[in-house]
Length: 268
Image: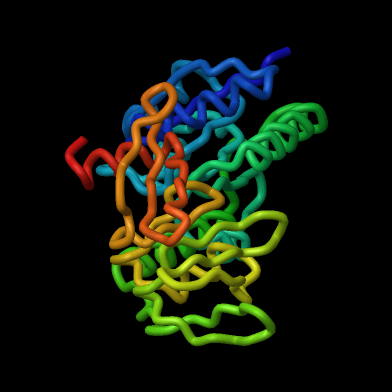
């Protein structure tokens, strides 16, 4: 029996990307697409989805306020998966019962893991709880405040980062970094003059050290320095690649979820 799923996100490309990943996994019936929190409440009431993929930050009614509105109206609570572009470690620290999370840009493997979790919960729980406990609601409020603080007051970025190359640990001015890419658990860093590896374990950890005004995660596996984009290259099915100005003129793919920002940045 297909899992009835609702997707709510104010970014069209994010909705399309998530719908594509969910449907490609099979056994999913996307019963609706919402663009804001108010629509989310009405669609949940009308469609009775088993799982709702809900963006945290939306204009008007945010993802957390949607849950409170469901409680106020005594609408049965579906399984909720929050989508966020912010610190996965913070989200993990505040995971609560019947709530999962996905980081943007979406990772196919992680999406499929979430679907499997939802299917197992459906198989073991005859009916979902009618509401959220006080403790769960407190944790949700704490998470919302934490994400808002990260958005409004970003941490100061370090001026230099360590790049390991030929058994040397070099301090590199981050403005010289063209891009960073993760593959098989290793983060490779390319600058205007050299290539090496970062000591960081994840791209999230590396991004914490970088200037948010310069660096952009265009794909789950790539972070680029916007000052080192040499060319925007149209690609397959309305997608794009970015040709960087490193010595190899590396081409970096832009995920579907980030294409909207690319078009806004360069008026495409």
